[in-house]
Image (cartoon, rainbow over all chains, first blue to last red; front, side, top):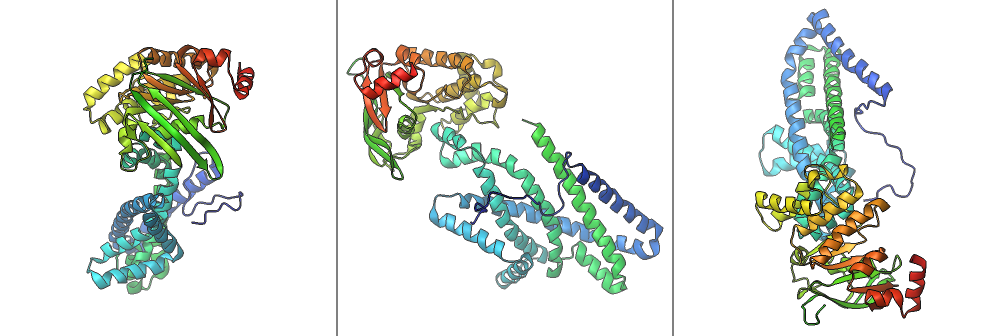
Length: 262
Length: 247
């Protein structure tokens, strides 16, 4: 991994909807305007212009459920992949380390959309899985590589003395990892995993090309029947926006709770 | 110390390199059952390295270390068994911050010694009383002062019923007013007959408690003897210079 060590200047720009922080008041009010504005606009469209919009709002809720299923399924599986690969990346066993590093390097070097196609159709050659299942596996496999780096960094952020103390009490390396290192690392990785969750929620729209009836695909189905493309995609965009803003707020609150604790 | 008491730790002609830097140069000494050995020397002299080699937190390049007859460097020996018998107290305490004081003491007891929870807690509470900090049993380490944390760390080590304890500069990270309370706990341990190897800069502690003082410089043992001999009449110039600087 070529971490950016050559330059000690670095800027930190989060991808996806930023988790608003209290100190960042500009973003905080922007969040309010966007969130309540989007909800207000939805209500206005549904009830103010029911002829064009009410049918859309009735047509797409199935898609929201599918989007959630894909997102939650993918993030859970990605955490499993990421933890395994992350532990592999810090392993002293050269084979395991090499394998995990290769996974991370390859996945991060191929566009997500290409990977989705590839894994989906590669899986299809060997096993016949329900479409949603294949899509979840494909998403999780990709996000697992990013998650692996989060876990690696999280584990390595725990001071060396913690492992030494556990070992000197007679614990094995894996006992020390489970009992001492990982519980502390989980607290560190929770905020970046929250960010990944929001990024994944948005990227889940890519599965609409894989015959999975998520929010975006439901929109496309509706639009191609009624030819009301503008109205449909307005609603789709607003719903994605409300969802990501809602979750970024929720994760922000969770993070604050975590910091308030011990 | 009687000459026939059992050899607990045997360090035999140990050398270690960090790259091209030789951290340990042909170091040999033995520690008998119940003996208290204090290792002193300037920083970078290898005193922490040799201590950490005894429970294989550092690997050595040449020589042999045995603990209670077990070869520490032999890959076939289960190093966890050695570490169960040899406690270690660190300069930076290294308490587990996500666990309460009590849980810090019970974790290894239940996971390694396979004691049940109530037995482990009983032992833990008794040890916390012994280091005079039982009122903090349910607090998290971050709420404790440095001296309190180090006393908990000593109790955590004792909870495994070790045959010997290694102290790696246990008071170096403490504010001056907290050093005394930690040294008192260590002196009590010494009186009870615990086998101890202590790396420290506390010369009064060495004078009072040590059966033997080992002075190291540049990875070598320069001088070894009783505290009276070492502090009043050191033979080696390097030791004289060190004492004149520190006393």
